Image (cartoon, rainbow, N blue to C red; front, top):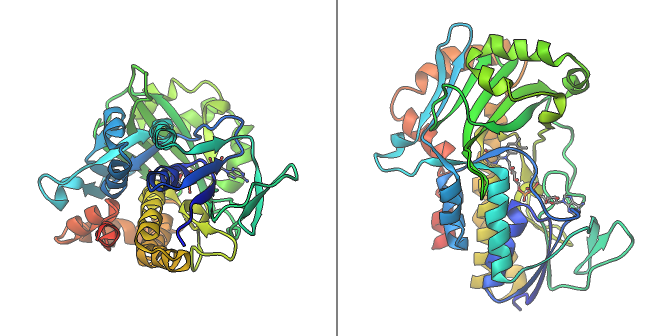
Length: 392
Ligand SMILES: Cc1cc2nc3c(=O)[nH]c(=O)nc-3n(C[C@H](O)[C@H](O)[C@H](O)COP(=O)(O)OP(=O)(O)OC[C@H]3O[C@@H](n4cnc5c(N)ncnc54)[C@H](O)[C@@H]3O)c2cc1C
């Protein structure tokens, strides 16, 4: 039997995109989120061609393109030598290959939120989900939802309905959305590294709906353990450290007036064996989370939502549809989780050996064909051709 009544916990990328797609198929869809009024957190995201294809399916692609900034290149330089150790260009996939799109997380949230509401999804805020059983969510206030035919966990990395990640990754990052200023490439994500111990990055993210000025996402790699010391430390001294690594960041640093202007994001790595738990089906980070070094999480969440909607459309039996969903996504997710697990320490760790491999082995190899094409396809989310199976 196809589910007619669907409940989704989590009003993020996965929850909103699943709601928009499933509602269009005629099911009643209710989203529960803990926010008093749903709102996005965080700074910038790169939408890759695979994610944009799903936004197009949802009908939100054009609105997103109008707000975002095309990103044709990821470039990372080692300091103090200033040699390029990472250079991924979207045109390595072909002259007219679609570039990535740098977006403000708030802009992505808004286009998905509008699409879900327009499709007719119902959103209940102020609902902290603590459990799920027998087609119902349990809430922190002791209440529970009505019974649904299908309940979906889109609660993100720390979902109480999923296995908890073992521990945060050693490094996270400080993030801020700032007014675009300075001599940066407006179509590139640029990073500067000192070994893998320090990293500063700048990425164009376009603007929020209704805003005039384009913005940049600024990030600074920081150890989880160093977070409190940073928060109580001298801001001017920290700015000196950033400036020493990349002097061009000065016009962005000038916009940071207090520690509170930056938000610390911690990362964790977890991949459930299957998106199917006895009481819920997982989409997005509640199934698989990792560091954003490869920049795929939101794109993966969109692909999950698309695959789930397609599987429910194709299979009239719910069990068969959920198995189909898992089958459509499993290998792509395993591949990208493994790639992220391998690449992250080359950019965020204390390892000298990995830095040597990054700079003297992987860097030169990455410039020899077909490595540039493979790297560009990896970053675009296209290795494993995830869309062809879902669209078949
Ligand atoms: C700093 C940073 C940079 C990133 N950069 C990129 C990038 O460039 N490209 C990319 O593709 N991905 C990126 N990601 C990853 C991406 O943000 C995530 O993979 C994506 O947001 C996952 O979507 P989700 O819907 O699964 O979870 P989320 O977006 O985290 O949404 C979860 C929702 O659940 C709600 N919620 C949580 N717990 C409860 C509860 N108990 N009860 C009720 N509601 C609850 C939250 O309020 C939220 O609305 C980045 C992540 C970070 C942290």
